[in-house]
Image (cartoon, rainbow, N blue to C red; front, side, top):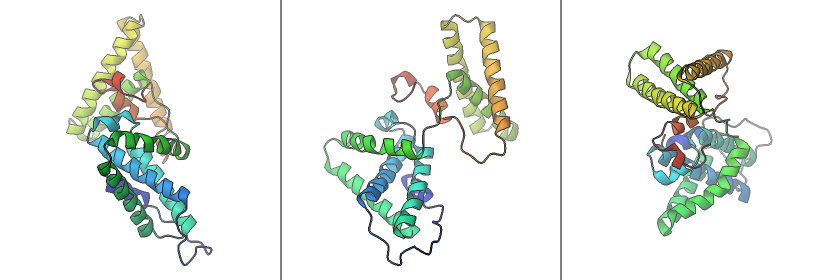
Length: 235
């Protein structure tokens, strides 16, 4: 997802009409400018995470939660100021341009981003709390079930192959961890089979729900990365 795709999501939901909406939009307050600046920085970091820029991978994955934060913030500011979607979008684009200019002018761009993220991550957590991180066993089960679901629809498509690879990596790491904890191969089979059954039941119980997933699915991809122990914000 590009920066501009994420920003577009910020304004995907129109503000509700209100008889109190002023004909002339109110100027942005310092708090609103801060919030729009955070929409911009979260969008930029999320975009760079998807391109694999190493410094931005030190932060939590931001694409989904950042988009939700952007949407909620955009709608709130439209309601508070009377600005249109287009006007708020322009304010966000201006914040993106301002951030890019600051990065260009500084000799320490990573430090600038770190300072801004120290402000924006707590705001993100307050508005869109992080979902609980699944365990390694749960992730192994989740990716295996995801592979089975995609395979049932698409056979061995590229997506199915990728999920199969990730499921294998997580299953292997889960077995290594269980072995280090003293479990036998048969005991590990039972534990991981039980985890798959529990996650399958969890999926069944949530069918038809329009809510976001109740676990941090992205954490499973982080656990499947080549060197997960070297990354921050992972437990």
